[in-house]
Length: 238
Image (cartoon, rainbow, N blue to C red):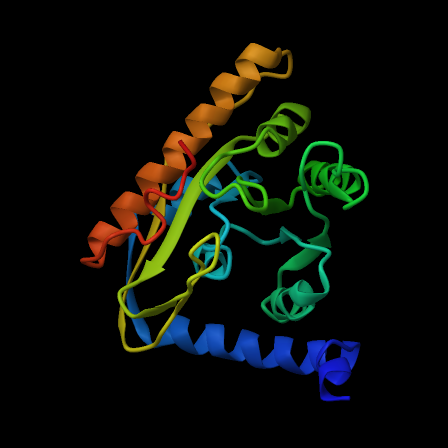
């Protein structure tokens, strides 16, 4: 009975509310530095844009929201376990868009194609959107989904990392992290990456690799700023 209750909508609402409250507390209880130093002005010049993150770091990304971002939507898995995360995003003022990229041939079944179109509509309406660049079970390998969204929308991609010196590091496939209070934090946003509307397959592959390299660099820099090493470094399959 308890297992069924824990997966129900009421439990998701309760857990999501508590999770959002914890994230707010961690944000207030850490001293954050940011790069670039004029982060709000830097982002305002390109709003709306696409926030790129590595899977496993997605729980920290809400801290990177600045005053220049009035509206933001975030892609969230359709899995039942992701229900509380979607509720937490809503409590943090972020619109959850449910969908998953999945493996080749599974994008439609998992709602990835519909979610991509929904994110494009949000960008067209002036909202910034956030999504993981890598797909499930392929850590630190950027997929084509995020660069395809940039091509279709005409909006640039911002590689982003948010880390704290004190955190929970989980032994999951993506080495997920959640910050702890009373430490230091870093928010790092890399150079914007544009994808031309006429990009062919070769150009999309170049853009994909550029996003991948950009995310590696912002995570390396963010962890260095808090005196730590990226626990996800080296996860990428050879």
